[in-house]
Length: 335
Figure 1: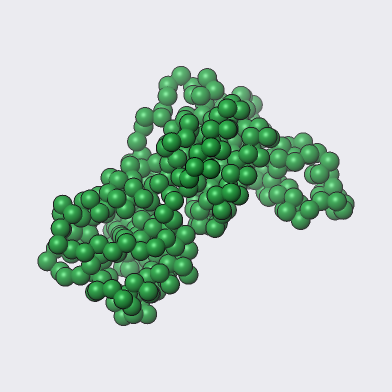
Figure 2 (figure 1 turned 30 degrees about the vertical axis):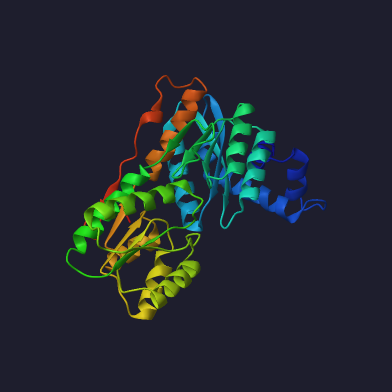
């Protein structure tokens, strides 16, 4: 019961009431306890290990497909971090407001943690919340997208400007001599990583294919329905579209809008080897995916936290995440 309470961030008495179906517990809190039990089941092996113990919190504002990828990757890496013993609490939300994210970070501050792995928008209130955590002795590592003005320990992920430039290179090579504009899409303008991808893409396109128009589409939150509506509006009013660089997500929605308009792009570049994208890649709807190994990234996040707490001599913060270009011909085995 004590382990469940710690995992859920509630009192032993609250856990007791939930387990015995007693009144006096809000539905949201009861759900929190049930999720904690599921997390402990997934991390059962960690509970049986001996060694210096660390409790970390993973906080992410992202679509559900990213939640699954992060949870799966981290739970696969936790046993490999011995002799340290890591346990993780997950706070993963879709369509999350910055205020709700800040409230969660402040709750972690009051409960205590050995560190936070954070994917959040780069806005002043999140920056302030990260700084408050550090003032309480709780380090933060940003994942995939950065909050650079905060006092976070490190950013872990790819060089997003380089990723955008790589996408521009692929697009320019595929479309050489063919007419039409290229659309670049993001999930959310407030995420620094996607903003940097878009900036890198535009800068490289100006060098590589200066006469080709680049259209910027509004943020879709990475959701298929929103992405379909945004692309449909663009196709209805803009010039012929030759290519798409999807720096965020919602690729099924983007392609559904193209199908409805009868305007298949000549080249489509996306990010990440999630199930939806792999299916589209196999079907020939996506030309290439820019991918980085999330397991390696999360392993590095944990090692950075270990170094901060004096449990690891070398500092892994300077390591870079490798960008792989995945086509239908080199999809990793098992996907």
